[in-house]
Amino acid sequence: MDWLASLASPDGKLLGIDWSVWKIVGWLGNFVFFSRFVVQWYETEKRGRVVVPAAFWWLSMLGSLLLLAYSLRQRDSVFIFAYAFTWIPYIRNLVIHHRHADAHVDCPRCGQSCAPQSNFCPGCGTALVAVGADAVR
Ligand SMILES: [Zn+2]
Image 1 (cartoon, helix red, strand yellow):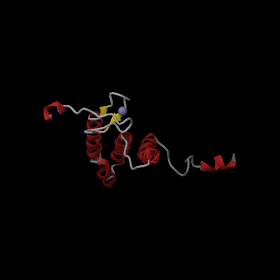
Image 2 (tube, protein in one colour):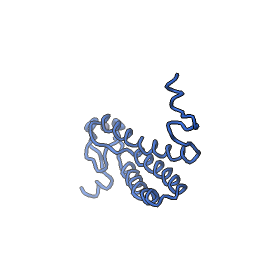
Image 3 (spheres, helix red, strand yellow):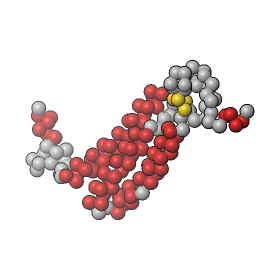
Image 4 (cartoon, protein in one colour):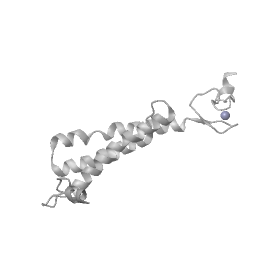
């Protein structure tokens, strides 16, 4: 247990860091922001192709907002500018993600969610009837 006691220095700092509520906010922001890479990597390995899940953008937004709050508290203009505008592409990507998800078609035979404008279900091969297909005939 000496190693645990050695983490705290005699001046009360843990790992050499003077902890406060704002330090916790900043480190939590770092942790949340970093966790997005783990989520994206996991999804990519699971599916065998590069995937950016919606959770990546939510974690990006939450982490950057925490880091922005911390940087505002620290009054660090470089750090503030780094996180002041990152929420814009995060929200835009979430909007596009949800629009794309809503455009998926459920297969009437097996229930699999099929990509927008699919002609056939990749799961069972059932022909998917697109909305407005009768007008083409
Ligand atoms: Zn199907």
